[in-house]
Amino acid sequence: MVKYSSRLDATFAALSDPIRRAIVARLARGDTSVGELARPFDVSLPAVSKHLRVLERAGLLTQDRQGRIRRCRLRVAPLRVANQWIERYRRFWAERLDALAEFVEQAQASQARMEPHEPQQTEEEP
Image (cartoon, rainbow, N blue to C red):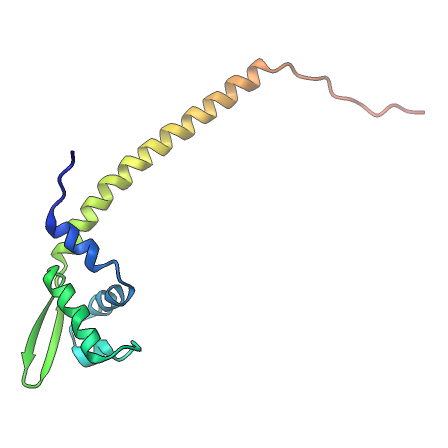
């Protein structure tokens, strides 16, 4: 049985929500305040704060307080780990699909060689 990392599980769980994915996408462009992160969403500031806590527990962001303003910064290490996991399986399935395509092409070529060719019909003049 394959054993998965709890950090990888936390990363995928955190990214399972569209608001959290949008927050990660925004933070990929640079650090910003919680207020700026909350602006595009039709949810309350406490709801956004809950999303930020989920991302923080997953290790995807850090928050720093600068006076009254909380600033968020993306941490990419968990995303790299998730990308490595996905890439391993992408290569696995690409190889399997390439093998399947080769098998189908060979089967079609083999079948074409075995089928008798019908003579072409030409139009007869009246």
